[in-house]
Length: 370
Image: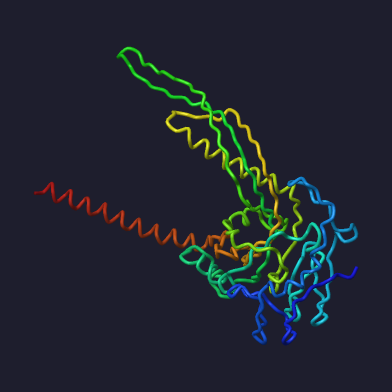
């Protein structure tokens, strides 16, 4: 089935436009023309179709899906600039042509229920991601030498990751059992007195735009670690912000993601209520009641830089928040370097310890002879 593509071309020279994170403008890398995303809003007219199968339930499952024959395998897109083929799975929403580096945007991925409400534009560029990675490596003595090479990064790309944003007013009531004890003795017997108390706590809190990763491809823990995002800088979705970047549409439904959001709501509320029960020897939660209202769900694309490093046939993925520059990811440990450091510092420690023992014997002897 032919796939509709959207491409931003420079009105002055016809080259492919790209969103520049520094100026927050859509720029032409060839003739230096620049445009605000609002200048290109006419390109997004196709997104103004009313969403089908709308429902009033803010946590409802989205009804629209790919047709069955499109739900498996890879889709083939044709770059209008060079005619090259761009391969992508069913969630690919924007990409760069591997032949001419032109940005292509898959229109269907942003229509109906798949149209994002918000986009948080990139503020950090590729160089910032590389610098953050080098800083992340600094001071890591037991890091494999391969990670210190400038060419260790096999792939680096900016991608708009789909997130669900959940807002809710949460009221939580908890009952705790608190105990205190005191002990004393009269010389013949030891006494322990234990007192129990029923502790009732309740609070209401407003949670705004709690992000939950909506992509099966992304590691949830890695995406959670990128927080916080400043949503005061979010703007209404326009495809112009995608120029020059990859993006995916969600493939984890909101009714699945809301369970993770609710878990975060509840843990936060329980932790804050438990913090008010100080002054007791022990405290145990006995019951919890939770109610929610004013629930709201939003679909957003958030900026992430992904860096991939391969070492000993294992792929290590690092992610950087494309808005704040926060970089996360686990580093490997070179066991050979660890062994060498253990021998080196173990030998130094043993030498120092032996010297102190000899000095102690010497001083002890000297004191005895005087």
